[in-house]
Length: 333
Image 1 (cartoon, helix red, strand yellow):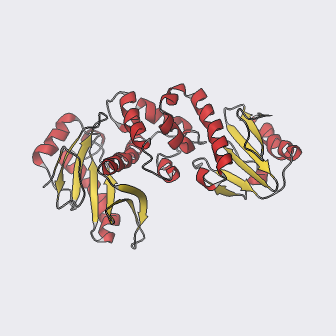
Image 2: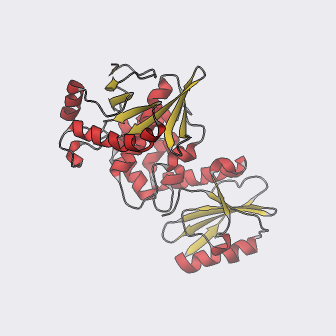
Image 3: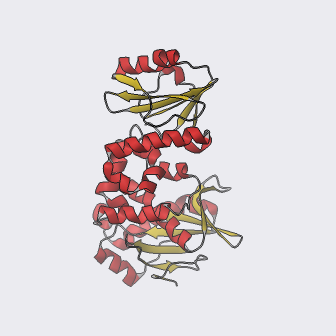
């Protein structure tokens, strides 16, 4: 499976003739391709070209003395196979800014509705224009309201657009990549990914700096560290599928079985010190009402069981002594 977009860096000498013979030639032979000048001014000190394939694929190549940078959602010409890969933040800023501008313009030409969400477009660009995931990620955001069941797509997208515009995540690639680049739409998995963004939003609005993917001594990674006043607190997130979409016959079984997967894995190995957030935003109103009435355990403490809505409201309950500030609407034990 292809990965999210990254640059390939070639440490060789390039000329337009070589670009034409070793990049355009193979692409045209295999896919049908044209090479043109880029849509926007190439970065200072670089020559740049744009490649458009008959199947809708796109690639960019920019070169300067002794260095060439390739990025695309198409097959990689063989002359670049053994090159190292770099994210947008790992290449020179003028090059990164130019490529991002080219790609965002392409994205908004293909999916004009995304232009209304510039921060989402930019943040998730590595997957929204990826080779294998460009169709499924856009379908999930538009047709599944970015993970909010039965919500208006604009409401769901605006929820995350507002959050991401805060700049809460310094480095987007790691979090954006979690949405995935699969050719098959997996709504449950993608909803689980967006739950991490939801929890990060709740923590950020409570005054915490949020750092994703914290490696711990057990060899596992915990979803977040929430930092405030010199103290860092670990947070793990899980999202049960609603009972209607799984074998569990009740909402209580659903949250317990899903939490058990986390507890018997990295949380058990870590032996405490992690707050588990259980996102029930996929649950129907009656199932959620049952949970709020019974407030069942989830086999881990401390835990926050909650449901969020795209209007910004949140409701839930806790189990154990949660060491984090929580939004209004979540009842503490």
